[in-house]
Every structure is written in structure tokens, then in C-alpha cells.
Length: 102
Image (cartoon, rainbow, N blue to C red; front, side, top):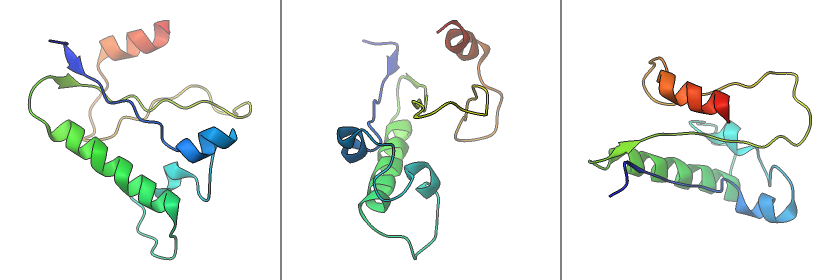
């Protein structure tokens, strides 16, 4: 039995097939958004992804980690960063060490 469960998600397969970052909207901007004027396939995809992640973390049993990994389409003005969803708590030092070593 594995030590942790793993959920891998391709956020926007349609954009990935086209070699672009977005389809209609930036998916990152849609999570938790309540702007009813925005609609379309990307909005439905963000709802579907949020539900799948919620269900994944709701399952009892093994440890789960959430790493939201992105590729960059151009150089960034920001240095590397990490976003940890869920309750505010410091990230585990072991996780930070593994990311630093990567």
C-alpha cells in the first residue's frame, strides 16, 4: 500500500493541446470566484477541479499532499513561490526541503 495517495490533474487539457496557457479565462482566477457574469467551459472546468480536489482530501485514510505546479510561458518577475490551500499553517519542513532539492 502506498504511503500517500496521489491526484494528478491537467488543469486545462484544451489549452495544453493548443500549446497555450488559457482557453477562455485563466483557470487560476476562477477558483473561488463568484462573478456570475463569467461563464463557459473554463468556469465549468474550475468547478469540476475544485470538486475533485475537495473529494480527494475528504477521503479517509492515507496522507495527502497538494502541490499546484505550473510551467511558465515567459520569464517571471517573481521568484519561486508556493501556495498552500486550506487552513493557514506553516508548510512542513520536509516538503520544503524536497521542493528546494528539486
